[in-house]
Image (cartoon, rainbow, N blue to C red; front, side, top):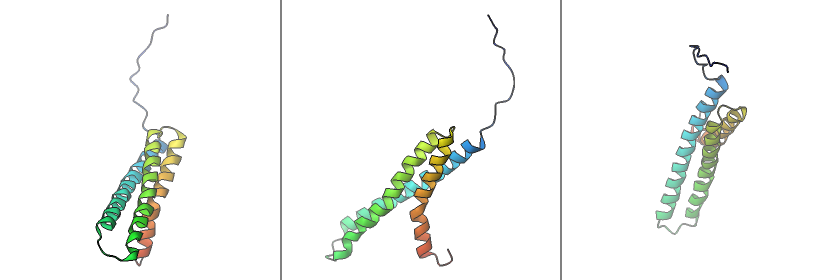
Length: 115
């Protein structure tokens, strides 16, 4: 029978791809949750509006257009975080960041003149 020997070698540091996947996933989660919250606010403000303007209903479209990429970004970010030790985790995290940051970048492009 062989003996198991203990070594006092230090633990290996996290791989750079794992760290990148976790960072991208965290940013995508934050942006995605903010987009979902903004979509909920748009939906609420549209539903409590009592005016008879026919364009009021477009608020629901804005809410869905903002919250849908946020939800997809949150799902992809969660999968990227769970699979951060694998190569697919970094790909999922980057995809989540791109999907979640899309509406935010579009908003900045439309509102901020120097962006």
